[in-house]
Structures are given as structure tokens and as C-alpha cells.
Image 1 (cartoon, rainbow, N blue to C red):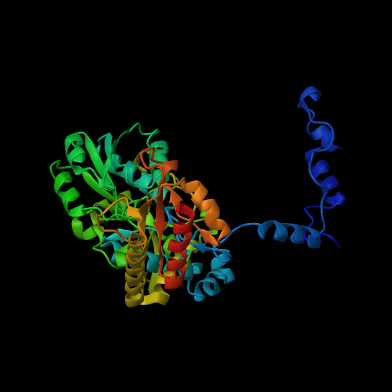
Image 2: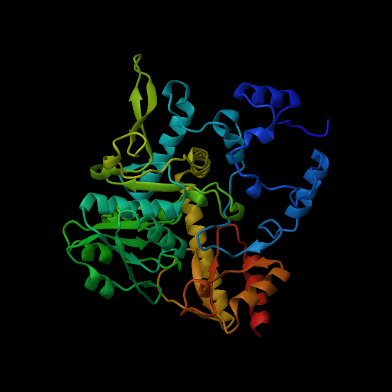
Length: 449
């Protein structure tokens, strides 16, 4: 047999047509005028057998440049990190791999516990009271937080730093069209949010202030100063978008009084895989617990007093009155949340802290080597695992040459920031070696003369 899966036999087709009372497929579409029906064959390849198709797809996939064939210094929201081998062993188990939404707790205890553990670890990292595990990615989690802040404060104005991820900014603008919120973008100065402009724009109509920490340029924002400014308006909220790995080393937003902390758990156990899927997280204070979008798993005891897990809160419109819902998010990222949970558990608290420290130290080494080679960095503030390199050459052309030398170069910031032409965002993670960093600096130096 050439095909592993047969959608239906000819007899199946006849039985279905007979059941609905027609004789032929053409009769089924009789209501569609003949003049607009497509006649002829589609311009596609004929069907191939399983072996031929697998070989063709394999040949196509091998044309891709990837992080196995090339050394990557590309970050900008998706990072090449160490993934413990146990992650795939656990998430490939059928009871997790095929599970979707754990509506029936009596048969979903493993899935529910995995989500509960993820929530707990995110709370520990962010310094917040409660967390969920049902966000698509960091960008949508941030946009959901903006809508929650507006719904909670009954205000329409949101101040958003331009130093957040450009794609997150785009998602925010899409999400706020429904509730009709006003987004005021705050400029960046020397790679961090312009606090003077932020203070000028803050008024009694402000629902929240959005800051990325560390921000898109890798710079560490002064959340203590931002909190002081936000506190000038009694009801305004502080929303922080954070790389959870960075929180293994730098002070978590919760300690600065953040009201909502969101981000992407891709850094824990989820490969780059062409930009997705990811796992967003949403953490907040106990006061806002009933406004959390998606699902929240809680711990309880059964009739015998045994520890158990249940879906405690679901504040989306499918489960409660629509006018009370904060979100209509429908999917569930439990498998990716499980991957992150396994990765964090495998690393442990000290291992996670060491991993964050290695990101910091290796990026400092990259900075030192670039400066020793005569390059100039765009910003001088504290940073985590990304730095902005100024080049005299076009970044796209430099990256093309780097590919030929076996490197995936940094992100071309001119794609999103008109004032940053010739600026490359370079990411250095814990798996980059001294040899790779030194060679990268040499190649960029040779390319730029």
C-alpha cells in the first residue's frame, strides 16, 4: 500500500452521499452557479507515495540554515539556549502529548499538576502572587495585560515604552482596537525608556505603564524609578514584560511593585523552531486574580484528604458572562508550559541562577572583545544577554557574509527603528563558547575592514 492514511473509500463516499439524499458530489454543490465553479485540474504536483514525499521534504528541510549547522548570535525574543534532554522524554509521553484542556480533573491530575508547578515557578521568578499558563506567547500576554489594566482601572490611556519588542507593540495595537484604548508610545534615550517623557504623559486618564525588563535592546530598565513615577497617579498600574531567565539573576519586577508581569518561557526548554510555538506567562497580584485571562490551576484535597489539582479560575468569555470576561483566549499552551517546567526543574534553583549568570558574563566578554577590536557599542547602561553593536556597513550585508562563514548574525535594528541604521542586536547565551565569540568578533572585523 502506497499511502499510510486513507481518508475514505469509494464505498464510504457513496454511503455519505446516500445518507444526505444525493447521488453525486456535483449534486451536492448544485446551489453553486456553474459559472463560478472551478473546472479542470489544480496546478499542483500529483500525489506521491510516503517514501518519495518524505525524501522530498527532508531534502527541502536540509536547505535551511539552523542552529545545528551554524553558530547563532541572533536573539531579539527567540534564543538558542541549553535544553536538558529529559524535556523531550517527558513531553513526548502520550498522556501529555495528546492532552489538550484538563476539563475533567479526575482523569487529568498529571496535566493539572504540571500546570500548577509551572505557575508556582513563574511566581517564584517574578515575585508575584499568582500565575496562569494559557498564553500563546510573550507578545499576546503583554497585550492581554494592557486590556486587563484598562478594564480594571476603567481608564483608556496606556503609556508603552518604545523599547519593548516591536512585534509586541504591534500586537498591543491590534488588541486595543476592540476596547478603543489610546496607546501613547514613549521614546527611548540611550537604549532605555525616556522617564522625563513618561512623567509628562502620565495623567489621571492613564490605566497603565508598560515597560520591558530587560528591554528589547538588552538594557536593564530602572523599574524603581518607573514605579515612583507611576505612583503619582493613584490608580495607574505598572506592567512589566520580562525574560524569565534574566529574573534568575536580576531583581524580579514583583519587588518593585509591578502589578502585572508577563513574558515568554521560550528560554526554558522550547527550541527556536522558526519562531514558534511559544509559551507566554501572565503573573499578577492576588488582588487581580479574578482578572487573569486563560486558566488558573489550584491545589486542593479530595474526599480522602489526598492532594489534588483542579481548574480554579477561568476568566474567559467561554466560561463566564461575556461582560465580566477579561479575555476570549481559547487555546492552551500546556505542553509548552510542561516543557518549561521540566527544564526549570532539571536546572534547579542554583542551576537556573548559574545559567542566567553565564548569559551575563559571556555577554560582558563579547562586549570587551568587540571594544578591544575597535567596535563601538550604541548604549552604555546595564544589560543582560544582548548588546547593540554599531557598524559602518549595512547589517543585512554583514549577516549575509557571516552566514557564509558559518554564523547566524545579530538582528538588524533598522528593520524596526529608523534611527538605528547600521545597528546590530547581538545575543550571547550560556551555550556560546569563548572560541565561538572570538571567531565571531574576528569575522565581523574582517567583514567591516
